[in-house]
Image (cartoon, rainbow, N blue to C red; front, side):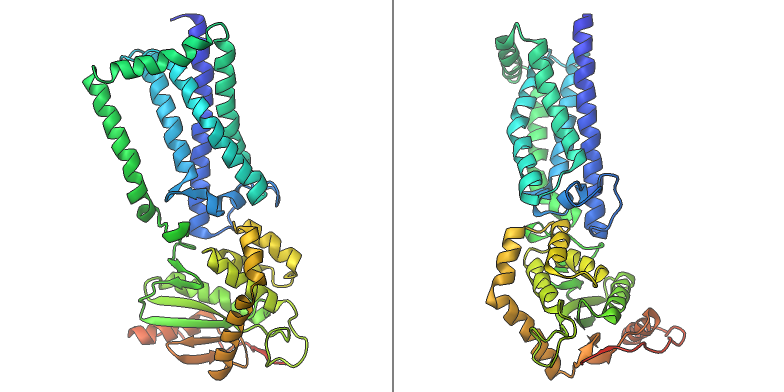
Length: 399
């Protein structure tokens, strides 16, 4: 074992460990985003353009039902196994530089595509992802430089040794077969284990999502929330609803319904009142088409005083939406028709302002605190009531 070989081992080990740790953090961030939504803390969420969270909430964070970060963890784990077992002579393969070289070569088109998706399509730079790109490129360039007088041997020795030893070494053959089986099986079990649903959509704050609905679809309590993104009491009522569903996750199914108090699309509003509410409703609809409704919904309520188009576009990017598909959807006449359908249905059922909720068909108009709703839920479930809730705050009446 020469000093030169040891130095190369240390450099490659450092690159693999760096890539592994970056992938581990990215996977942790990915899971945090899926459980809690996009409003999580991260040192790499620096701005709109430099934001790991934006990348992890995008539709490109998952491929074939497996998070991209998980592929990274698997890739670097394989590299570390090859490096350590070969360098210390634990298995018959010794040409670790050649094997790691080919791993680095194979990674180049992959990281190129990932960088393009992040920088160009999503429009955000993920610092931790850049660490992964740097680790791979460093391995490749370093191995080429260290073996510049024997590039042909670098390219040939590892594969030749591996495929020569494979049929002759039973332990190596079994290990390869088991690894291949485990790698293929993840496409079947990873999605349900991590809560990934069809189309790459995830649970929001730990609750199952289907379009504009949240919670168990077979729950005994069905709540429809007719709301307006510019209405201050709707914001408060929505927070209560989210907390209520969290407290009774298997018992409540919450569905968002649009009732923007905006004369631009609501025929029952005679004059200007909430001039950005119809726009917000359409963007919400189209976010649902990409299984990202609740992420954008959360941001629009949180920023209800800033819902002009330039603002919503920022929230949509941060929510991981495909912007070209989103804008096409918003421009479609069918999107406005869908909003109008909610408005007319709400009006016909007695809604003339917001917030207005139906709990198992019973209309409750106005904002009420959590205790009020808990008593409603507990009564339906046959449980003991809580203390008497506080009176309702006023609702946003129709102008």
